[in-house]
Length: 170
Image (cartoon, rainbow, N blue to C red; front, side, top):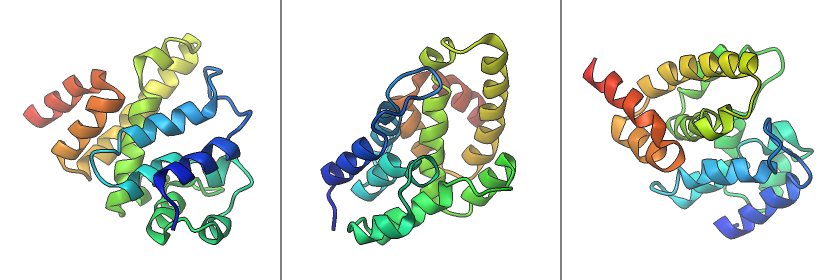
């Protein structure tokens, strides 16, 4: 069975040479998502590190299993992976049927929504993504415990804490 450090190495190699929407090395994104899951357990951290590996690299779920990645981790990664022809909103609803996948996607959403990242995007794209991520949070956050959401966003994107508090007060 793989350790978190071994899974980090897999993610680093798999995403080598890839950059995110703002031109940063892609592995920084998956590491930020994983960091938000540290309050939970090592397998959730592993899932954070690997959450985009199936859709963004040539890695498959079967290869992850062959490499000794725990089955729970592979199942979470499969749950958050885009499926051809499935609209984003439907994907988000599907993810909420798995509590572990929901936490991973909350961390992913929090990092994608970070103001430091958003300010580097063109205004039109920034506005479109902000609306998309806000709508996803409405669904994801409704499916999770506020304390878990707070633990994640405190680490990944503290600017979302006010939104969380407003939601809890409503």
